[in-house]
Length: 218
Ligand code: AP5
Image 1 (cartoon, rainbow, N blue to C red):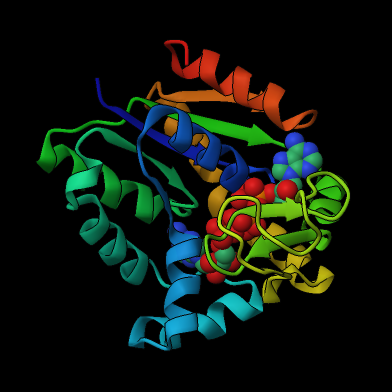
Image 2: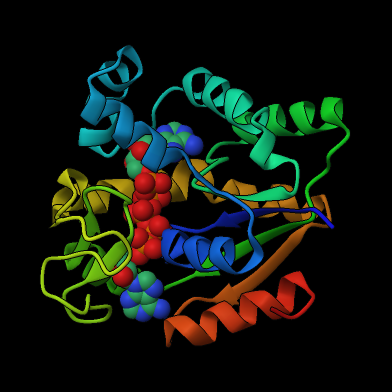
C-alpha cells in the first residue's frame, strides 16, 4: 500500500534525520527540496544560481521554482509507492499547489506529521550539525556522531557544515518558519491530516512514535 507523507517542522526539528529512517524502513523515497536545491547550487545549474542567494540569506526560494521542482519529482516512477516530503510545502501557496497536483493525479496525502522542538534546542542542533557532502545525511557534533570522525557512516563522504547553519542565519530561518510555514499547521488541521509530536529525546524513540502515528509496524 502506498504511503504519502509530509514531515512538517522548523529548521532543525529532525525532518531530514527521520525522513531518512522512514525511507530506509519503508522503501519509499525521501524528497527534500533543501537537498535538491543544495545539489543544484553545487552543480552550478540555472536553478542553483537562482536559489543560492535566497538560501544563503535564510529566505525561501520563490514558490513557483519549488512547485515546478516538486511537480517534476512526483512524476518519477519511484514515487508510485509513495514518498516522504521533507521541507515542502513551506507556504500556503505551496500547499494549495500540492493539493491541486495530487488531486489531478488521484493520489491524496495520507498524513502530515508535525514535529515540535523548542527554539533554543533548534539553534543548538543546527550550530552543531555536520552534513555529508555526498548523501546529505545529517550528523551532530554532540548528539549524533559518525563512527569515524568526519566521515559519513552511510557512504564514506566527508562531513561539512552547511553555509546556512551560522547562528545569525539560523535565527532568520526560524523567523521565516514562524511567519510563512507555521500557518500550515492550521491548514492541515483543517484538512483532517495533521498529527503532532514532540521531536525531543532519542532519535530512535521519535522514529518509533512516527511509525505508530503513520501505521503498520516496521
Ligand atoms: P532545508 O534543507 O529544508 O532546511 P530546513 O527546513 O531549514 O531544515 P533542516 O535541514 O535545517 O533541518 P531538519 O529538520 O531536516 O533537521 P535535521 O534532521 O538535519 O532548506 C534549506 C533552504 O532551502 C531553506 O532555507 C530555503 O532557502 C530553501 N528551501 C527548501 N525547501 C524550500 C521550499 N519548499 N520553499 C522555499 N524554499 C525552500 O537535524 C538537525 C540536527 O539535529 C542534525 O545535526 C541532527 O543530527 C540533529 N538531531 C536530529 N534529531 C535529533 C534529536 N532527536 N536529538 C538531538 N539532535 C537531533
